[in-house]
Length: 109
Image (cartoon, rainbow, N blue to C red; front, side, top):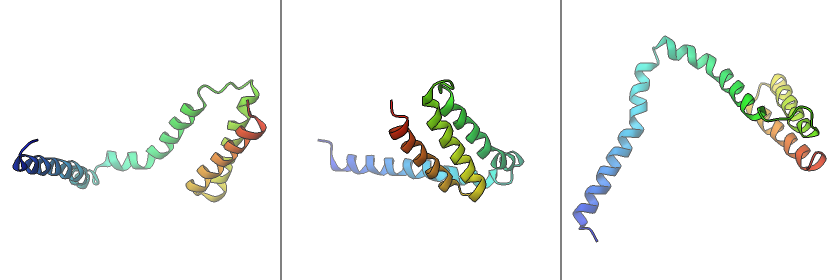
């Protein structure tokens, strides 16, 4: 068993490194807020991320099989809810609920 001063030093070093790693993004963020690139990305990235997630989720979906109906209906519900209410949480939860219900009841393998 290591000595007590060694353990205290190890915990202190670990705590200092953890604190520094968590504080570093906030220190860098203050300089980046004025950057034109960061402002441009903050307006364009949410839509880009959604497109990437959509392609990732639907990439292996066979469009000719009946298995494709549940995800496509859920996608339509998600888009419809978002266009109607402009609430991301409602859209995600509504689309997920529709997909789970359809996939586990009507279109179960």
